[in-house]
Image 1 (spheres, rainbow, N blue to C red):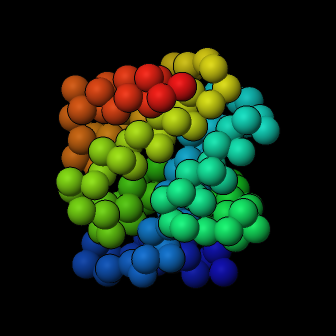
Image 2: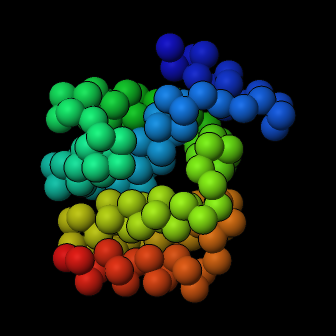
Length: 146
């Protein structure tokens, strides 16, 4: 399953990915951000599941399964660019700030910001066409929500 997904991610730019692939790509990106500081903890895993339940209307069981798949994929995937390309292909530009908000929600789930996490969010935002100002505003909204 993951080998085929990775093939689709590394295929030429012209290939459009199915919605399920975009979901898996976002999940793997969330996991990559959570793991980037070397401390992937229960708070971050729970936050990822809540994001999946809310964003995609999944049951808790389905969100857990998707998170598990995202964890496996993240450990096998070569780079962040592939994940963002899959998301960019499926998420309209005006909705990508919400994607950045989910990334910040995972970064802030453990109550600490790490430079590695910040760097990946900044890279992902740039690759998704979201400028630093809008990314910072997204972070502040997430911080305000607590």
